Length: 444
Image (cartoon, rainbow, N blue to C red; front, side, top):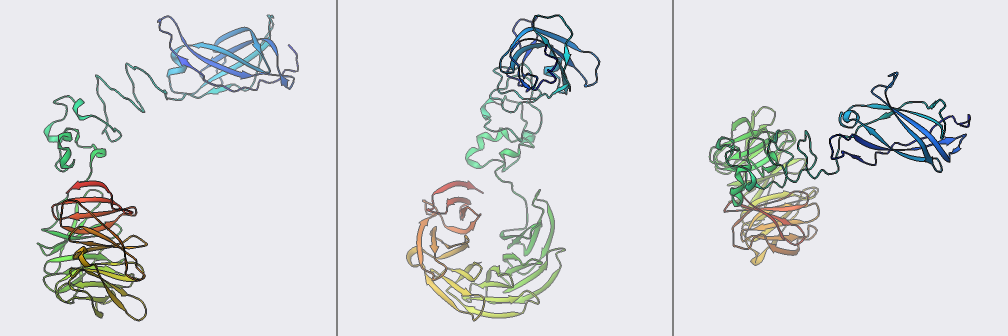
């Protein structure tokens, strides 16, 4: 061999790994390399010795000699027989490559360095596997057991689960929505992937809800208190008394503010420990409450007004007349908007000289909810109409029904993509914001 041949430039490609059906055969992998002779791609016949080693410094290993291998433009390919040792055990192995001219019996020229073989624990697809410790995707599993909590399993047909494999004690209520109760056998203790929602106990007749960045708070109208929940597991962190029949609830960055419908006042509760920091009188039957970044605003449904409170001490900044029966409120970054049961919405300018205007919803119905999507205002009417409003002038852009069965609509929420509307019978509809198309329906 030309003594100027100094180095083998190579690339290991595992083109195929297979097990020959007869038990006497070994595993085989395909090795492709590139040989340079004197700095140029080699051509001709060469003998190639491949030594399989368990460690980079192992003195000797298992040799396989390939005689008179055709090398063309530096490229050669050999099929290396090996035991299951290298191909199955998931740890690093090494190959030592040695070369000599073909048709010769001289010494091999050992190339350096020894080359690592990294195992990749992945099979593109196995038509049938008798046993598998881990499967990325399995279309059929028969016999044996599947361990773990099942959180990564999808598209599992409940009818294929054998009777007796899931006991009654493993089934949790409200784990799967009512229309699919027949799939409830899937609901074992940790099948989180199947949980659409969960229900957690709070006070009596919860009416309003808010989030303080760490905890969920509910206003419980029937028990005259508010509940602080851990959102990770629904556990109750604390329950704190407020006024009569609390309805609306909002967080201002430090404190929780609660509109007490039955006592015509607002409670201020410190979020960190639930301490009552004060109670402040407003109009009659306050229902909804909002925070504009500076002050708190509450709708007085029986006084046809909204009251603006200072968050520093709860003092009344101003009271503004609005439409008949304001029951919902939202801030769009510049204006406060109220939905009024008297078939209207009211817009209030927050900064500068206070100004307001009331815009009729006409035959679309009594206002029950109001929301802002970052561009437009959406008023919800009791008849289930969602009314899209231009904030700059209060004009109606379009409207669509949130349901098709005459359900009384209660509240509306924007999640960043879609609108959600709750109805009096416990149904919740997810709507495409552009045209009101029904995307999902749930029963609480």
